[in-house]
Image (tube, rainbow, N blue to C red; front, side, top):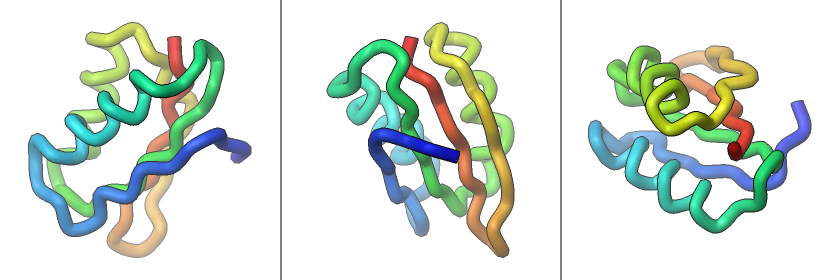
Length: 75
């Protein structure tokens, strides 16, 4: 999937993946896509909830080994 920016939060625990994502989204334009890589076990439920709460769209997610990958479209 095409993306405009990437945040690597591998090895970071909650709440750092969400905080780094929020900071990255603040620097992006509406409609741009952010790729997030995370290993925190809570990320699987945190990112869908974050997207719903903030109005950003979770347009994809996958697993690459132990790494969870999310794609968020900036509102």
